[in-house]
Image 1: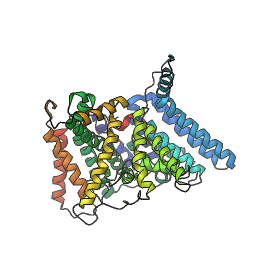
Image 2: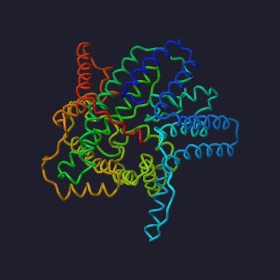
Image 3: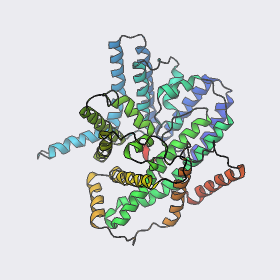
Image 4: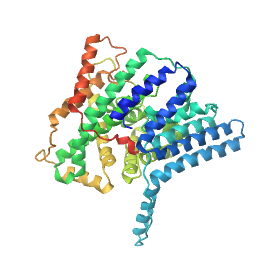
Length: 481
């Protein structure tokens, strides 16, 4: 079920009314959330509900077994959790990739072998909920959290529908205890949640879906356009993926607030980053911190020699790229970001920009503007790899920019969609998020003294844009991961 669908528009108010109608009975609320989450997920394909049940039941029982066990047995139980969860992920997401790569490797030596391919459908959100439940068993193993005996609360934690299919990837230490607490409806919390949902829909429907129309046309046939148009394509895809994914996260966080839950922030205005390390502290925060805590630190982090630290950085970015998809383009994309990250790390400047940009000032300085532009250019190289179907397609895209760069937009058009109309919401997104760069989201009015009539004018203006520029619905990009 999609957030931007009629089905969900009917589903949400029904569940909302039933949830708060239970009058604070936590166990019944959790049961309702499980059933609602399974309906939400099963709306796409009910057969894959079995994977969520297997993952949930496995980690619930294994974590219970870790409680009184010896250290050796605890390691064995953790290994079982890793095998089950990563095994499911490997079969459904990576089997065909490894099989095809194996065949291709033999063909390089002149040996042609045949394989019987499996018609495997990638379950939506499997990369997200497997990592979420893995965080629980790992934290129980590390004794950071006690194993929970309330199976209903745990199943609700794993399947919680607002963030089930595209995150944020929550930690058990943060979200799981909220399923055991009494939850009361809070008007201010719900109002802010609705504002964040509205802003998320603006980013998804108005910005991302409309940018996608142009970006798809360019990336699907780059040979038809001059280099100037291809650069526009990179710009449009950057805003497409940001509006799409951060829009989903805003909607998920806002929905959670309607039900009395608090999710972690997943995006912190990454396009205002002054270098690549800062970008990764602002982009898909739940994933980057997951890899930091469960991969980078266990490998030794930065505590060993420089060589080991460099190795650990490459491993994290390699795994991060591979997490995004079973394609060599994602692997190279991850390694490219490791190369971008490494010079600043070796110079000890990778944590230079940890505070807010242009704090106390209306505009960034000339130096900050230059840093933002340079970071955007480096990310642009990565976006080409991320969007291209194959490495050869990406190389063709780069080659066309370098060899046929003419400032010409002849023949570049999309029926019924004028690019000047698209520039307005993109600029609006940039301006609003710059003004709100110290807030949690674009419509965070918590610390702003804005008259109520002015706020409602903003809401109606966004709703008008949703109506005027909607209708070009695109799937959420991160559903495929």
